[in-house]
Image 1 (cartoon, rainbow, N blue to C red):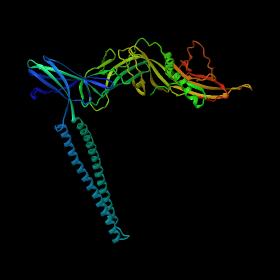
Image 2 (spheres, helix red, strand yellow):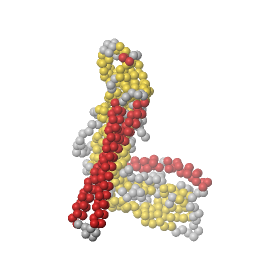
Image 3 (spheres, rainbow, N blue to C red):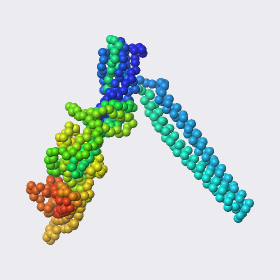
Image 4 (tube, rainbow, N blue to C red):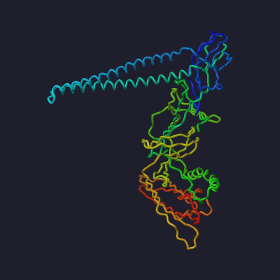
Length: 538
């Protein structure tokens, strides 16, 4: 096909679907096609384009005959942008020379003034030793001081300007370096179209580029009086594809997802018989299966906290509206179609869009692990009554319009109930006291050690209302048949709604103290093992 029938067309990015590590970009070109078969070229496509993903569709009375990806090498083709940057560098170089000359001249003037002052001082001393005219000295000092201040100020200003010019020079050098890399090869797509008569057509070129991505984060605004939580579901989009997405339709896909003010979790507290080196590996293997279940055990105990949500939503004061999105469910993923148009520049910076904003009724509860932290952590239970899945991501927490903490939200499916942490609340005072460790007296012929450990947990509700508070602690877990751990206090009863213990010896108390009320939890247990055994973990 001759060059007359080969036409480079102008196109703009019209729509982008962003995944966690790539994006599907659609470019649109509208033009008048003359009768006959012609090759239309989409030029200057991104370096990271995935060739196998290229597709072309269009509208108009035309026949699409072929689509071809190609790489074109450029060796001596002039580039207006490069020329403009080169010219800027030349001007900067001239300015830097002028600034350098100015600084050098000011330094010479300083040296000259200093030499005059030194010479005058020496001459005055030689001519009038002990009889120096005070007026002359004052005038000379004032002249010297004002001139030196003036020159120092001039030098500082020149050096500041010099640094700015050098920074600008470095920026242009970096830009030229990146342009130099892209000048060697340019990606383009050639589309052969056959039309029977002159007509207007539109071509949509779509392709996948690697590098762009998005990640969720949440603003959780809680009203403690109305028990209401406003969830603002945001997305941070970033891209460095060498093409800016200006005023385009943005969609976010959950396909191929990228895989704190939160209270610490307990780990099983093991007591073991001390073993020689040859037995260590076997003991480790025996313990691995138990450790692997730790998180599962903690999750099971936490699930006991779940309660039914209130039925009616309490609306807070209206917030400024934001453009949000609609959700589209696919076979294996969900797509959030952002309302309106967005602009995402190719600078690698995060650009925020809002996916959803909605109020939810919440149930509050406090949770604490006194042996690890003296803080009570406020939690809220809500139900995701939307069609939007909440992806795992960080949260900014605002309680009564005050920022209190950062936390993290786990994956939440539509219609799923979940707990989220809202940071610490110093209105609940927590104390964990170690009282004593003593050895139980045994008979003369006893061959065992029996140690008793006593702790006291104190919790004070300094809030103005009754609150739900869950307290966590633990007993050590015996990992040897001759190590025996016994809970002495409190007494564990079946079907107790206040005190529970699971297989990992995690202890859970649920209290509802009134305003100003204080409660104490005594914890006492014994550890017994043979005298000849060395026990680790205590």
